[in-house]
Image (cartoon, rainbow, N blue to C red):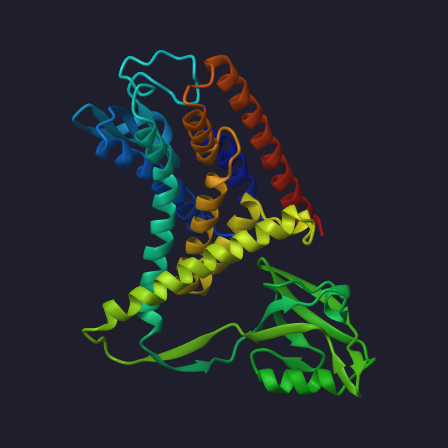
Amino acid sequence: MKRFLPFALSLPVFLFALAIPGVGILGPIVLICGLIFIHELGHFLMAKRMGMPVEVFSLGFGPRLVGFKWNETDVRLSILPLGGYVKLSGYNPEEPDAEDPHGFLKQPARKRFLFYAGGILANILGTFVLLYCVGLSQLRITEVHAQPSPLLVEEVIKGMPAEKGGLQAGDQIHALGELRFPGATTQEAITYIQSRPGQNLALEVERDGKPLRLQVTPQGSSGAGKLGIQFMPSAFTTTRRPFQAMDPLRALPLAATETARSAGAILHSLWQLVSGQASVKQVGGPIAIIKAGSRAAKTGWENYLLLTAFISMNLAIFNALPIPFLDGGHMLILIIEKLRRRDLSLVFKERILTVGFFILIGLMALVLGLDLWRLKH
C-alpha cells in the first residue's frame, strides 16, 4: 500500500499543475519522480546486498512496458513514470499478516532495519552527489557579473510595506515607479525607494508567468524609504578558471558541509513547526514543489540541482520520522521489539500501520490545502 501513496498523490497534483500559468512540467516531473525513484533504489540495493529476494523493482506504476530479469527480480519500466516501488518476493512489509514464504520476518532485526534505512540513505547520498556537482562548478568561479534583467525578489520581510502591498519571494519586478528592468540597476532601485518615503509606487510584477500590478508605499525610516524586501538581478554571467586536477578533491568537503547544513536547516525548521515558533502556513506541498522546480529549471542547472538536493534531504528526513507506515516508523517498531526482546503481535502492528496511514493521508490533505490556499492569495 505504501508504494501507491506517491502515485495517488502525484497524479492529481501533476494534472492540476498543468493548469497553473507559467509552470513548465518537465523539470518538476524529473525532480519529484527522480527523487522517489532514488529512494526506492536505495531499498532495492539494500535488499539485494543482504540477499533478500526482490520480486519487482519498477520505475513507475501501472502495466509493465519493458524490462529485464536480474536473477529473481523483474526490473521494469511501467506506463506511469511517477516514482517507483520495490516488492519483496512473497511479502509486503506494510501487511504484517501476509504470508512470508521467503522469511523476511525471520531475518535478523539488523537486516530489516537496514532495508528500511536504504531509501533514507539513498536520498542523503543523492543530496551529497548533487551538491558535489554544484560545488565542483562553483569553486571554479572567479567573477560574477549582473546582467540587465528584471529584479528577483529574494525575501519579503513580514509586516513591512512590500508584504502589505502583496509582493512575494520569487516575484520578478519589471517596473518600479518610473524605473524599468532591465534598464535601471539594482543600486538605482535602492536609491529610488529610499528617496520616496510615504509615496505610492506602482509595481509591474511577474509571478509564475502571470503579470501583476501592485502598489507599495515605502515606510519612512530616518528620512529614508524602506519596502522591506531583498532583491537582486535575475540573470548573471560568470567567469570560471580552467579545471584543475585537485578540483574533485576540493569539492568533497564543500559537498559534505553543505549536506550537513541542509539537514540542519530542515531539522531546525521542523523543530520550529513542532514548537509553534513557525506557522504551519509556511509548509510547502507538492504544488509548491512543482512551482519551485519549474522556476529553478528555467534559471539554470545549478539552481535546479540545489533545489533537487534540498528536496532530496527533505524526503530523507521526512521518511525517517517515527510515524507508522514511513520507514522511520518501521525502524522504531524494530527498536521497540529489540528492547522488549520479543516481537509485537501482528494484529497490533496492523493497527499501528493503519493509524499511520491515516496520519499520512491527513498530512497530505493539509499540505495540498495550503498549496491551493496560496494559489488564491
